[in-house]
Amino acid sequence: MDFAENLNSIRQRIAAACARAGRDENSVTLLAVSKSHPPECIQAAVACGQLHFGENKIQEAKAKIPLCPGKARWQFIGHLQSNKVRDAVELFEMIQGVDSLAIAREISKRAEQAAKTMPILLEVNVAGEGSKFGYAPDKLLAELNELNALPKIEIHGLMAIPPFTPVPEKARPYFQKLRVLKAECEKILGAPLPQLSMGMSGDFEVAIEEGATIVRIGTALFGERVSSFKRAAD
Image (cartoon, rainbow, N blue to C red; front, side, top):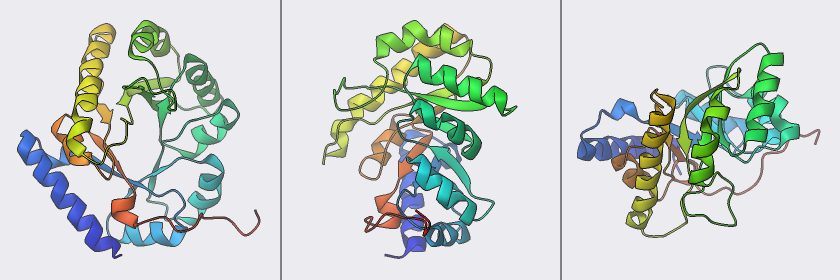
């Protein structure tokens, strides 16, 4: 599969979805999910003008990122364990998927040690699935002020992964739910939350229609993952 062709197609679909929603296409960031793809794929993507990438495994990112072009920008999109927080703070410009007060506290602590402030997104389990991580909406609202008081994190918005469905339209209620929850969070905080990270290869157009500002797309850009990237020393 040709990355440049795939990227052009995705960009056109993003623009069309934005037009349907009466939005500026520049209001949506395309985050290329590059997990298990080697540095050569990142180099090719950057050459095509794609600069934003998402990884979900810290060890893979530690090995890969130093081998990739310096202009690439990285976000962590997986479930973060407390013993990996220091590396995440060092490697990424944003951590998506923060799903507990304990992890948020650890991020704030490690960010303070690194003399930086860490932008985060709070992950919401919009369907209450037992197999997925993420805040229950009520718990998020209850802990929001405490999260916001942590000195070295900045809450930039929410993210979610709705239940898988081959019919994109069936994901719409979950995207709507996240958008409404973001508005509730903004009322509590008295400040805007600019980011809604929702939508992947199969449903990103519906997500954009419902307000997504970050769409996380892997397969539709890179094709199917055939093998994991591993550094020779592993």
